[in-house]
Length: 341
Image (cartoon, rainbow, N blue to C red; front, side):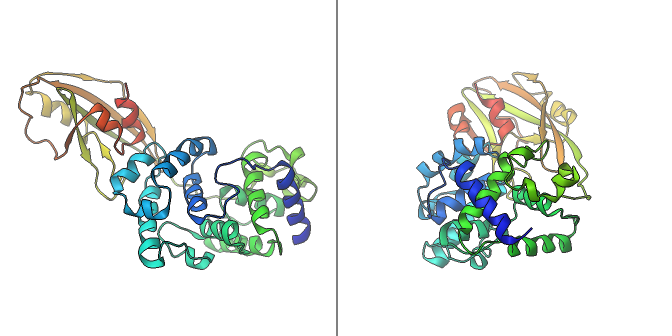
């Protein structure tokens, strides 16, 4: 396999069969490319297609995003998950405005110094917007390259990851880096899938080491897996008249900065706390929610206070909001689904 043969095959395939109608394509605006790259991390294209236009309508440029309150950013991000992306997005916009005059720096090295922009995202922005010969190595591209090259290195190892980066850079074509980069991304997303790749449609089939060995699904090699944990908590959906109580979560940890229902360490703790309250409560069906490293069982208790009853003591400080107001705030996805009529 040569750099020229692989790159030529990818570029030709991209022009004829790649994706061309996505709303963030066909632009050299770094703001729009950056936004799409961040949204597409850990999120399917179909979901991003719903959020991307709404986000741009509210924050059409980096200046508008930088000037917005974090709560507004999180509210529009609600449901996309991995909320650190939204916080880093907001912080990055502020840095671009404050330290770079509202312009994204035109090199991958400088872009990678900004909050939340890693090496691969920086390379994608630089390639698509500034024509830089920079290699990306997101999940889709890792899968395509490790299979095509038969790369046996264990990507749990930083040394092997570094070695794959070097090979990705060596394969970069002299020209049309933007088309080549998009082609690798599209191949991984539509042809070279994690399971049951459609090798017959792949432009790299004739030169793919993994296909020749009949083992494409063995790549990429990554032996170390994070052991999943399990947590259980209770949620209090406290209603009084037409309002409910929301609390803002700490700026560190799960759902950092989002508004949520008050959380308790167990159903027993919550049951004991509400035992003498006026009104009536009902335990709702439990919610199973999967996060990156653990599964979370959330047991909601809806409690309705009489309209003129005093708010019970010992509740966390929060905000009383109408249902409409609550759904316009930055809520975790399972809480939003719980509150939606």
